[in-house]
Image (cartoon, rainbow, N blue to C red; front, side):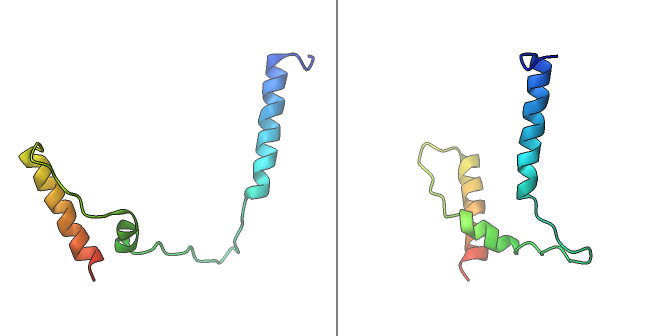
Length: 78
């Protein structure tokens, strides 16, 4: 096989790609506890905001917007 062989070239590029990714790996101790995820309200409030509807929206869309806004008020307005 020569370097011009598509199989060899693909295999070599795959190995080089995988080798470069190993430098990004992090490890923890064997007894380390995984970090607890933040409470849902913090992640929701970081990305959510009130939504406004238009007169052209359907009743179902307006109902969903009101439900979203009620959730936002309950979690983020504290």
